[in-house]
Image (cartoon, rainbow, N blue to C red; front, side):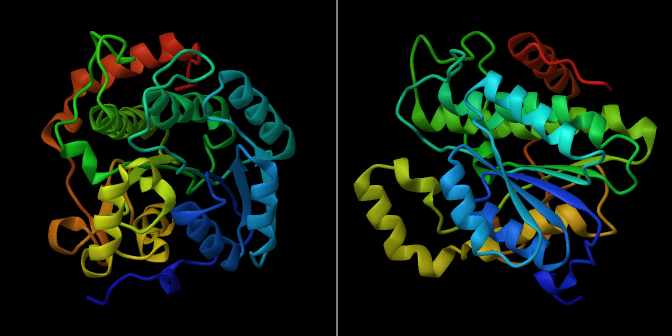
Length: 298
């Protein structure tokens, strides 16, 4: 079997794709590939000017939507704006994220990484889902990380890391949450038979996501990146396959097929054992609804 590449993306004409954090890195490459295949791509970003600069570099039908995932008010406003513009959304790609940030909180008091990477996307998906329901071939694709296996756990006794804080611990919790969310969402969508939820991870990719790592770690990473990391375009391939491969199934998780899944062609991979824990998925879902006050229509 030949490697799957962006050339394998089917024609996307007539489809609308909303991509968070698509002004740079993997999100930008995802937007670029989908726009080139005919999709109307909506770059949903916090900084409108940067979004417009990114859109100007793309060929095809591209628009920009202001969206700050650290603010539930901004998420609600963005969802309302998108629903007023589009009767249907074919692809919602939850791509934006932060990694190993210093301790901080969102506008609503959530730990920054958990609030942005998980709760922000949970709230956005819940408020947009009515535009994806019953749309044949519609998909919610959430970008996780293989870092969810690095000691990731959901700290229900201290979700916001108020008692102590670990940059990497908070990051891995948020990435595990992305997968728990995807699998529970798929279970809720499955009876309807049209919209599916899929997850992906980019492996190790040379993007701005690692900008919060300590400087010595950043320097070491850049020195060895040519050996084990892939470009943002390569890192976008698992997302693109999850979003467009006609053979993709709900609840699948795509990542690179190379050593330790750091780079390579996108294939279906396995996530951690605890990510498949149904009780954990349901508990996180209930807590997320309580925190965001967003109730899904499924």
